[in-house]
Length: 199
Image 1 (cartoon, rainbow, N blue to C red):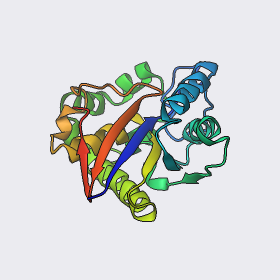
Image 2 (image 1 turned 60 degrees about the vertical axis):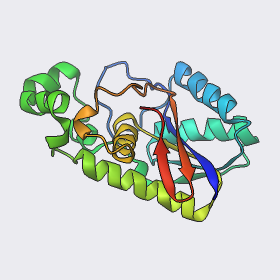
Image 3 (image 1 turned 180 degrees about the vertical axis):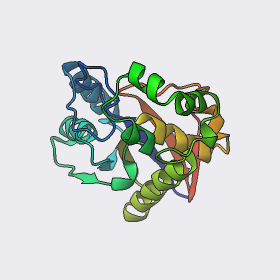
Image 4 (image 1 turned 120 degrees about the vertical axis):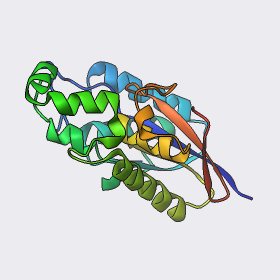
């Protein structure tokens, strides 16, 4: 039986002086975010990474390229995978400050924090999890039995982990690992089975 590691990485901190929901906006990494990405690269350096996939967003692309530089002097090309993209809700709320979001969409925000499994605005967590797992399985098929890195965003990463663990999507805000910027969450690939040991 083959054993491998799947590393789910959240992008580094971004430049967001206006404190807005940045969704699909092309926001760059801050200096802190670049340092976070470098730290992730150092952690992954001895993990035998075969490939790096990243969502199309600027922040994930930057994070992935820094990781590649640290891990393999840039010799691992970053592969763009659209299914690793930011959440549909993030895209829907794009450009708004937290206060504007609360004033304009109070019911949506209440649902997001209380019963996120029922939220359909932009995209459901179930659909988010499915596309994330589709991207992961695509990578596994391309690089069987090898250690892989997927650079994505908080909610998509947590949605995928909840599905792997067979937990309710309502646990989105109750998980052990918050998945802050520059986080690395490991999944074990045992044969064809994905195992989440994070929570």
